[in-house]
Image (cartoon, rainbow, N blue to C red; front, side, top):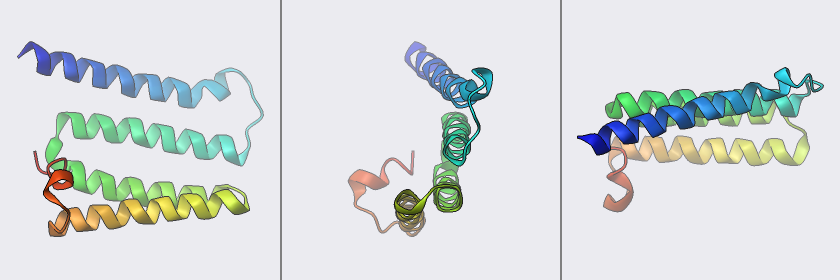
Length: 116
């Protein structure tokens, strides 16, 4: 039982660290550019997704799907030419993996992470 509590505590600490890392450019009064906004959106999204999955593992597929959409769209809309396509491709790959997990068409070694 102590291992599960320690795992959840470390997960919460990781999520808080990602959130602090995301808002640090605002605290340091850095110029706010599209790259900073994209980083903030993605880091906070990953932290929130990690917290949701940590406390409700049955939502893994839905959170993964939503995360793919936000990463793809925010990267494509806010970043410059070569990087926006890379983020769009990564977002599409994450969405495809989430859909395949819903359909249970992934190999069992990968599918075990979606069905706990």
